Image (cartoon, rainbow, N blue to C red):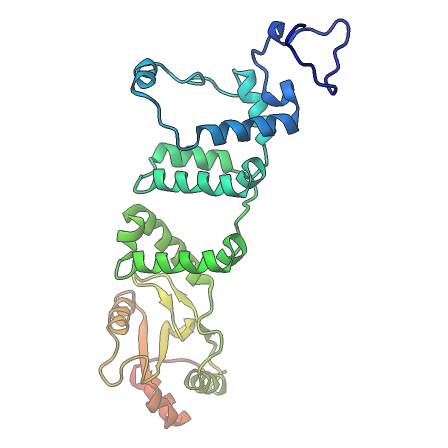
Length: 300
């Protein structure tokens, strides 16, 4: 053709359909131009539009018009289905490159700032993720975000949460669920892992007196449930070995007072010893203490 220039690389074969007659509807860039070429085109479009603002005339024309993909889903539209299949299992970095992925992540973060996720959205996410293995479960911040990013995130979280209660941070409902889970977990947890010297001494005395006992038994019968130091089921007796420092000698701890009263109300007998008292306690004195409380047993 006069005035036209055909590249030496361009090959036309007999029977090829001219581009002007090709039906581009429902086709992606990849299908029309191939992966490499489509990638170049997208980059050029992105660079060309970067920093540009729509003119008032264009804004007027677009006003009231719906985006082309409004109401469409990947199940009903071939273009969205192909796009979803191409992006499936890929990260932002794999799809857009490191720089572009960082920009997108920042935009999403800024747009979501201060927004509260509705209950219906949380339920949809929960159902979508049900049965799928978590990508972050068991991983530390350092493993997920790197040392520098993890350090910044931890510091930001610490500043935000400083001086706030569970209710202020997570809300009443989440706090209630969290506390219930913690209560169940603590019931199974042996605390402390190693018995203290004063606890061991009382345990040895009970063994010598041939009295069956349990250590760190979870007392679920009372409102302020906890793990007692020693429980003797045959006598319905709870023995507490209170360290002078941790239990605020000689006044006692407020929680200890509350739990003692709740145990008494639940028909348990309670015998509390201070650590300094146990250190000087003899077997005969311990036996006499039990007898003073009118606790009777048969030595077999």
